[in-house]
Image (cartoon, rainbow, N blue to C red; front, side, top):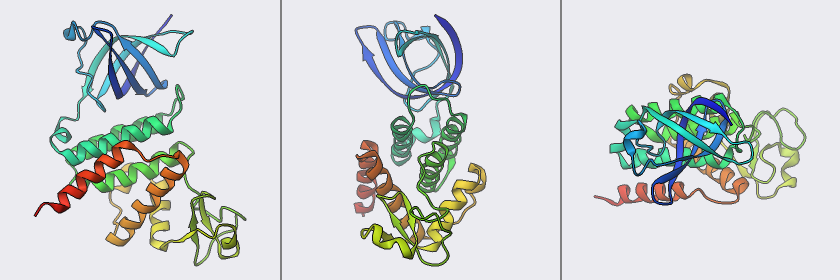
Length: 255
């Protein structure tokens, strides 16, 4: 077995037998992988991490060539993102991030850009007064970095440059020009400001995007389009997104 050390975000974990635990990680150097931590429940001091979901850790693991389940021998906490864990809405957003990460990224496919995006988003989520904006940026950036992004540079059908009006097609995966409207009669109209915002977020780094202003109308349309795109192409709604929506609805209902 080969031995490796890498940074890792805990995606989820579950108990295994009486004393051990299995965890799914997204790592900087190896992408998504799963590992067993033997004896962690019987001797928690053996590991320097509480292994909480979406925590940032250094792990050492033995790679098993004949199995997708590796042996994690050490796990040391780097950042627990303690400050966001006191806010229910922020916990919900962090949950959406890691579930989307888990759903989109294939096993053992290295993508350092995605890893850095997750860490930066969680760090910013700790202190931001606008957590919904962080989630919007995260969704657009992870779709772009993973190669899963909707097509907003030109018409998805004829590839021509779009000048003026356009519509957004879920089935075609992006914008369609007026000449191609008939190819998807369910395509919906979209504000130019929404298109410009998506392109800006796709092309700029995380810190630059934090300064982007989003008016309520564009913010609302971004959420509708991104969630519709994800649900259509993933063929399911994220479980954590449902929970987050329920939290937000309760917050609105409280007088």
